[in-house]
Length: 283
Image (cartoon, rainbow, N blue to C red; front, side, top):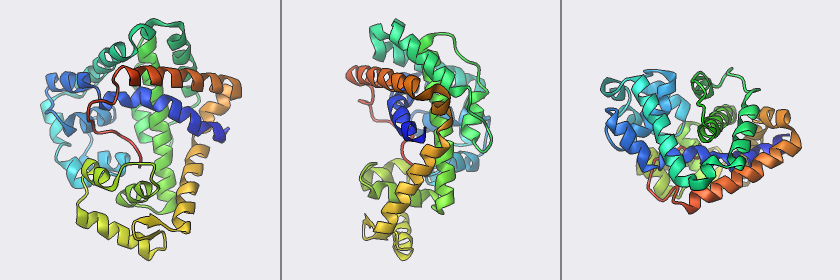
């Protein structure tokens, strides 16, 4: 079922990642004690793992400059407790989804999507997947829109952990992973990737030269070998993400995809992603 994994991911990922752009998240996390800006992203996504070091956050988030992460972690843990951060994040999801989904918040379709997504998570396992394992230890919320959000979060973090495995298998460092993904033309622009992930021009160019020496890039473009490597990484990521969709089966997975796309269209139409954020996007 790995061929459906990418489709299912794309259909549900925005329902999780809207939190990184929602003004409600900044408001609630700052009210909990964090500083506005990047600290709220790094702390809220790391918090399920506990008061971890900057190194742990960098290792699990993969493609951020470690120096950037170290500006905010572990200082965040001195400003707000883990429990306060987690509570603020869940409140943020509640407020943001109610605003973005509007009448769909209490719809039968949303409840069905929540049930399907939660069922898909029942076969996920923690081995080698630290971000997923941390989030999976959190209690399930009760309301369907929050069940949907939590399930989408578990599915996203599990897939992301698998993607990290695939990147490591390919021998790419954190910066090399974002350089090659940007070169596919399907991710950030070069300038946006540098800014959002905290890499200097010198660091980016050094990584690009290393990739050129390995035959993976020519200038700012991927070589045939580089294109093949990125395709292999995506295929391996899909294969490592197949279990939830094998469990649901083709028919229920297709239904989840349809419902997820419809809910994504709704939140986008109502302003999701219209506020600049620190998106936990491509690795």
